[in-house]
Length: 139
Image (cartoon, rainbow, N blue to C red; front, side):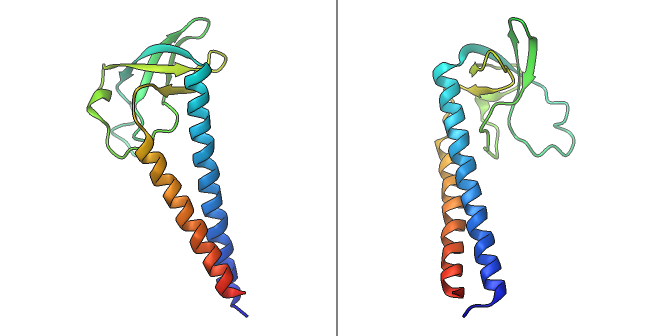
């Protein structure tokens, strides 16, 4: 019989890994849906007023016009890169797809995000696998 700490740790790792996997799948699905049925447009990368502060999000701040909503300033979904790529420099025009009913839901088009998706998938799988192994050892 395992220790209560081993059971707790195994359960926590399993739940955390499962949550990361669920979040990763939901983000990929949301981006694919926006690219498939969203409205295509062009957005300008604008200066982030929080960039000098403690803002941990590295996603570029985008500005674009939406009929009926005016100017929309938001960050794209699913951005997890640590470094900003040169194509997303301030004042650059980038292709986007957005939801016309909720234009703050926007995704960058033509920017590969497969490596960051793979990173989150592997992280979730590693936590879930460690959790299952800890639970198996504790039982």
